[in-house]
Image 1 (cartoon, each protein chain N blue to C red):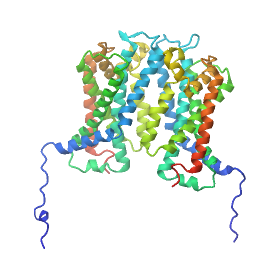
Image 2: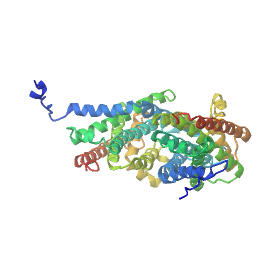
Image 3: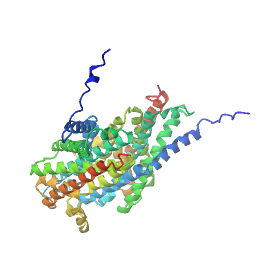
Image 4: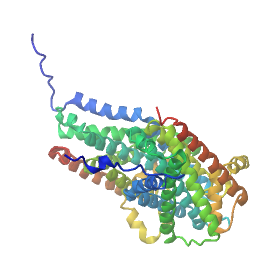
Length: 264
Length: 271
């Protein structure tokens, strides 16, 4: 009896990559209560308390209603957070439970493994963001000004935070490390980013600092795309997102290739 | 050959009076050490998150909202945020403790020892109350760096801090016993505890709500705990202080009885 011949594949193991990506996306759907339901509720709560607390007094920017200003910010905040969480959690879980061995043993190149973790996280971030944008549209009169900016900045933010999440997942030895990164890095980056306030409401000294925060530019870009209001120039923001993405991608490629904390 | 003398005179069982003081204390200390061990997650993280909330709200609304309840926006906001952090953490402490014990199977270590149901309730809830109060203290100290906090009525601050923490610790205990997986407790946190703590006047005066919601707010214990606690700081309350004090006591009595019954009958705890 003839043995089945080994499957041949070319430069890219597409079937392997597809399997890995689908596994991540499926995980997101299976846990939709947490991955989607939780962010939706907390976004609506944030929007509600802001609008109620402002009590009609608030127009952050003349001509733009408070909800219109806030929805793009909240969408991007949740998108970034979801991309982070859905990258860091699976990487760390696979590592701690030992399942990462199954992935390392499969005929997948380091680049394919990296993509296999990052792409589902990007998709998770985008799906969470879209759901919240859909909800936000019910409460805010948003108009699409620039589809390119919307897609570009949303994709960039999701990619950046999926990469950050993958990095944290690789670096962390325990769940506590993951929680620390989330509480002390990701949440402050998300909250202190112009999600909820304008640059001009900040003290003079803090303005250059916030301009270094990539979330600030992601929020700015998407807010421009949905309201037509831009606080800063878009191009430097795009570069400030693109640079770290490229660097993190190369770093992580290298880390998966050398087996940092995942190979004995 | 001599048998070891301990076999000839086995140690007498420890006599326990009405209260197993040593057991109760051990359980309480275990519950407290459980969260102190990871204090970056259980004390520091809530403090940072709450300070971030304070920052974004005052930055976003500080200029347009000058006065709420007769004080500046930040002074109005601070007590509400402290209370929010306290109740979320009191709930998280007891609920996670029970669910983890159940999922990992070491809940028998709570059920086997000679501890009566009310001692179990008190020990676990006491851990949650301690976490709530410590988080409140940490958040309050952190905030006092940025917001001038003065205490108008210390007894109200204390009463509502303890009762709110107790209420949520008991709710966490009840929720933890009810839940069969981590999912369940995460769902309760996301869909019940967080909405209640957000929408009960932490961030705005109840006058902001549409008229039809006032009735709902006036039946909501979360509203009274925040309102009474805030009164202790700023000397202004939206609702009735007396109703708040009585309602909190009544709710806690009811929750205590429920938690006690659940443990005594072994609901979802004993096979």
